[in-house]
Amino acid sequence: MHLVLVGYEEDIQLQLDRFTAELLAIRAMDAKEANKLIELSACLAEVIREALQSGANRDLREPTTPQLSYAIDIARELGIPLPADVLRYRGCMSAFLARFSVHFRDQLYGGIPYTGA
Image 1 (cartoon, rainbow, N blue to C red):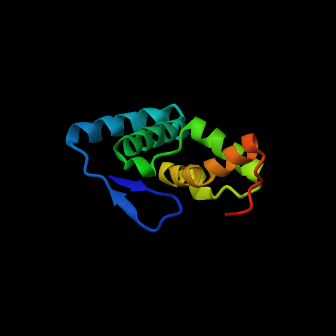
Image 2 (cartoon, rainbow, N blue to C red):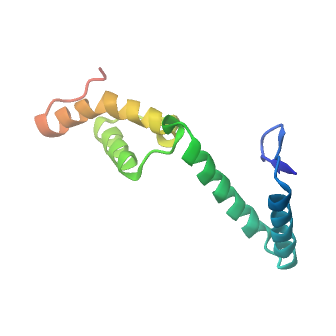
Image 3 (cartoon, rainbow, N blue to C red):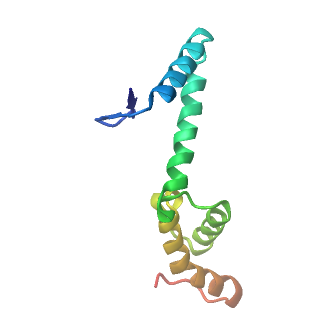
C-alpha cells in the first residue's frame, strides 16, 4: 500500500500487517460506495497527524494556543514580524518568546520602547 503526499516527489510504502490492510481496504470500499472517499481521506490524515505529533520531538509539535496568542501580542506591540516557523513549530515559538517577551513586558509595563536589540 502506498501513501501519496501531494506536492512531494516520493510515495511512502506502508508496511501494514494483514489485518490492518484488510480493515483499511474495507473502509475504503465502504467509503467509495457511499461516495465518501474525501471524508475517509480527511479522517486518515487526522489520525496520521495525531500519531506523528504524539511521537514527535517536542520542538517539532505545533505551538499551544496560549503561545500563539502571546506571540501575536508581542509582534503587534513591538511592531516586528512573526516568522512562519514560529507559527508552525513549538521550538521556534519558544525561542521567539524567550527572545522578545522581556522587551514586550518592558515596553508594555515599563514604558521602555523596543529598539530592535
